[in-house]
View (cartoon, one colour):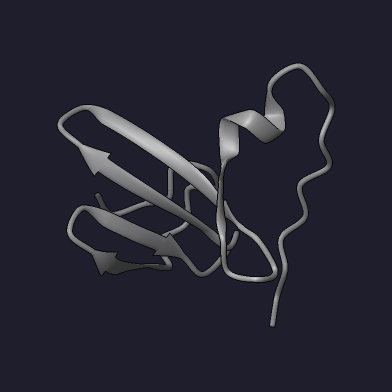
Length: 66
């Protein structure tokens, strides 16, 4: 995987086995076979499933630049 599945940028790094982090939109994602799971990184470092945030509600996702 060479681009982020959320923002399409190439600023990704490998976190673990089949796990990646996007520096541009601050999400983590895992890739196994054809299945991609996307996680939002919370302020305390915990991960929440990205789809849970988006499903059924309007969410304003902002890119955080450090």
